[in-house]
Each structure stands twice: as structure tokens, then as C-alpha cells.
Length: 233
Image (spheres, rainbow, N blue to C red):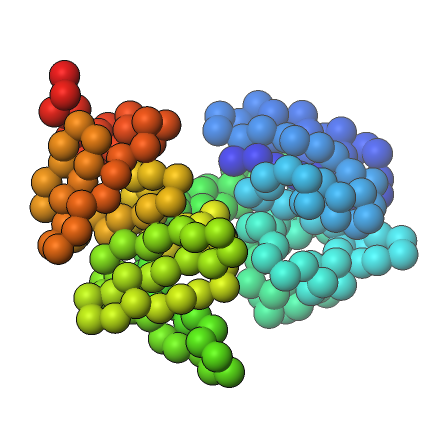
């Protein structure tokens, strides 16, 4: 776990850095003097566990934690026991009273590891099944499984559905970002194909119900790497 220490006391930062650096699986990325330095580190680096002092100048540890939209795991480190209930309300991993002893620190890190592993196995949200495209003065729902292929024109694209064609003011690049990567593949500068509608692949074409799409030279390797060996080899 990447750890960040935030404490205005130099000796406290030094002691924690020494202790944590000797624990397998933990790496002290930085030891900050205040919340402002810590905020910069959280924006620029991946931090898994935050050791946060509570009583600091300008911004307290509790106020700093409340200001974070997506905080990492947090262990409070403080000389005052009166903030224990507040720490519980903020869902911190543990609450360490100074001076911190190594056995107590190990106990807190064990709790953090357990929480960290739980977070790793939280199921990712399912991918979206549809998007909306602008048609005249309204937004029309387009279900991804109904898209056979997308054709790029000069200033717009044609979205070929199973039963209709929609003309959309968009670039191929912008629309490609919307499509689920595991369901669609770029086969040509001007074509994106739905993998589920491809029935056969030739050296320079993909076959789909009612239409054959060209395969661009620069897209050929990715196509055959994803869908199968090059039949021209």
C-alpha cells in the first residue's frame, strides 16, 4: 500500500516513516507537514492509506478528511482521545494515540490491509447498455446491441441499426469513445463494426448480414489479433 503521512510535528513524521518503512507491503510515498501539502500529493499520486494527524494549524485533520470527495483509507494519529467518536463517524480504519507503539501500529495496518483487499474485490459497475444521440430537437435512445456498424462521413456519422439508420452530428473518434470496447472494433478509418454481427473475416473485408465492410491496412493487425488469425497468411 502506498502510504501518506500528514503531521505538523517533525519528530512524529520521522518516527512513523521509520516504522512504516519497515513493514512489508507498505511504502511511504511522502510525509507532509500540513493538509495543503497532502492535498497536492493526493492529486498527483496514488495513495492507498493516509496517516492523518488531527490537531494541525490552518486545517484540522477531521476538516481535511471531510473535504475529500474520494479519500483513501485513513488512520488517525493524535495525542488526544476526545476525537475518537468523530473518527468513527468518518469511517476511519483506526485511531492511534501518540506516542505510537509498533505493536499497535501493526494492528492498525492489519485492519487497513483487510479493508484494502475488500475494496479490490468490489464488483465494478456494469457497463452502460445504451446512449442517447441528438436527432432534430430531441435525444433518441440507442441500445448498443442494436448497432450493426458505424460509418464515418465528412462532418457526421451514420449509425446503422438493425432496423434503421441514424445520422448523427459527431466524429468517429468521439463516438468510438462512447461504444463499449468489448463489443465494437474499428476495422477501417470510416467504419466501426459490432463484433456480434460479424459473420466472417477475409483478408481485406469483414462480412456482416447484408453488407461487407472494408478492412483498413492500419487496422488489420488489431482486428485479427482480437478476432482471429489473418486468413491471408
